Length: 346
Image (cartoon, rainbow, N blue to C red; front, side):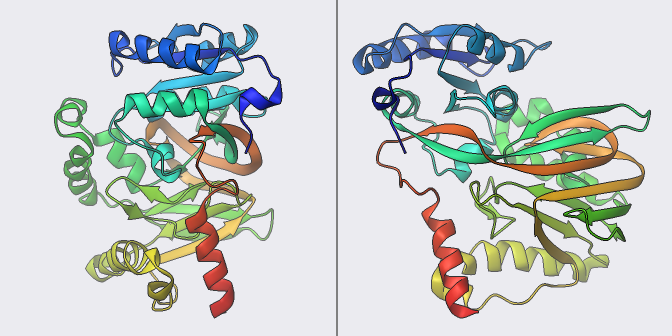
């Protein structure tokens, strides 16, 4: 991990902010104080809009010479800014806002503390993480390419996001997803698909949900992908295919109890069961899936409309993220502990 003050790069930051989620009067003085203290140039400021949620602003910041871009908004703002920054030398700093804060949670960054987040941006260090690159194929033959940082997928999660009431979400936060989840469960939610991993054999499946992850944690301390790490150069895939109530019970026990409780400690991981029929995990660098009909798809909590298929690959170390100076140099200590423990017990 290296500090920008040590690399000799130009010290110019840009702030890409969502005016709906961010109070500029609160943010600007904190940024100005930290940039002066850290010896950075006066920051550039870019406001997002409905037409451009942050990608265009991030590219303008790069063209202006910014070496760090602060994403001030929800998961959507973070994702599109990261999409513009991945593969460049500029670093991404997170100013978490909103209900999900998916990447910030998976990096164990402080939430709801503006001063700490801004201080970490200007006085912290750099950490390289992977990016997920996805090519979304539509039913009309068109396709679009994007990046994601946490998860992408078809099925119950995408339908839930599409069904979530935005007004309720603004009032009660992520709990609004519970209502949407209950509504979606009444749907049949069955996907008929063909898929391949690492360009191998094409297989058929029927599933409720297909999720490709670059990281494993969700709001509510839910660990969906227990072996996922943002810097391991791998994609983690989970396929949910419950059959009636017993299948859902298997999934909830596996995710909430085994992943969420047992999987948090070395001792608990010794008691994890083998894979259950209703929930299957895969790992690889390239995942391709084609559905028999168009379904809702989501990227990092953002609904992206309907799609007929997706091609996903991992871009190892493609994005640089600013983290607190005292963060571990080698990345995710919890992930390393899981790998070491699994290796000793295998």
